[in-house]
Image 1 (tube, one colour):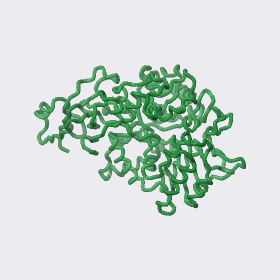
Image 2 (spheres, helix red, strand yellow):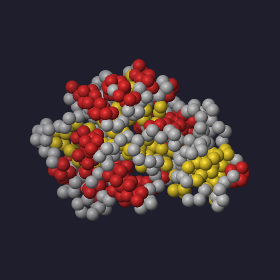
Image 3 (cartoon, helix red, strand yellow):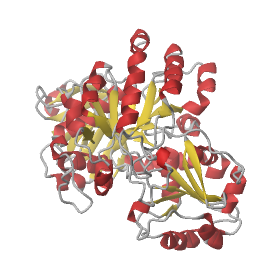
Length: 539
């Protein structure tokens, strides 16, 4: 590819600290060659020193920032959402069933129904759903629709049969097969009990994985994303490799590894940081607990057991411990020994304490192997635990749009000593913050995430009052999608800014995210997405 000179009204290189002090002034030109930034500055001066044959791409009045990375997405689940039934806005079990019936009528016989993202916290009645209501409209077609937080599955009888789930199937460790008074499975599967469904989605039941990834890639590029960190199954990795072989991979991928295949990762010699700027091996994903929306995150205080949406025994009212401290110690020691970092899902404050304790115990070995661990979500953290994130070098991989979705659940976390969605406190503690969406739990729209982090808006567009001091500046929020995400994948030396020798990844917008009103940021248009110096998407 010949050299290209991109010109625009404003180009932010973001070469200074997260708070913006020391940032170079905006420029109007960036010269790229061989997928890298060569220089930035005045277009006339750059053109005078550019290689022969350099082509100028004039972006007009646009504003350019370094390419945005979503540090936590589920590409397989996102493909399901793009192709499947949408239950997000349904306000009852009956409304969900009607939508599923309409969707089933459009599908070939035998196809599984995935997707859904139903939200019981929005339902008029709060009783858990049942397989029988699905059976009435789906017959022998297997249906397994996921909750909005992706931690609960609602399945029909055909899906349970395909999964081998009967009244005699024991609950898996760290999960629950919800049963009725007679001991029969209701079709609701929680936490680790959903893992077999995820395995099915990652196989033939999910459809052609390469075509699905190609479709998702187009969708993500249109959101201004130049890269993602995926936390689904290994089919995503093989599909990305196939697209690359065809010359059709346009989005950078950091692939987090499922812990269920740890023996395979070790046997094949996979190491965190292997790969290149296009496909890179990330840490191993481990679940410490569940989610707030499903009332399964591990908290130091109990959830209200009189809430029918909780539907857990009193002994489990503090949430679900998916991987306990002893098991976590064993996993972390084994990972570090084999050059693998950990990305531990922890939402509840007690889960985060347990994870930090475990990471502290393996800190010396972690440093010796040059690894950096992550906590995924870190939604509720005891304030005394925040300094440990920085001391241990742990990346806080968080999703600002979750605050918006969970604002109506704040009564479940009443303790003021628990820092909730504490983006500002994470930075103030000296830790690194990386932002993502958890798509399709939330839409993979980084501009929405920046607006949410700056305002802590509620779903009605008004500022939320849940720990409002945790707001960020626009520069800090943008950094979490650029330099923070690069640090989370160990790529700070090659990604996140528009300095010379960095990857030539640009997100091109119609507003300036550093100066525009948050509403304008949220509603901005992505005019183009440039990855490796090439325009991969144009509005």
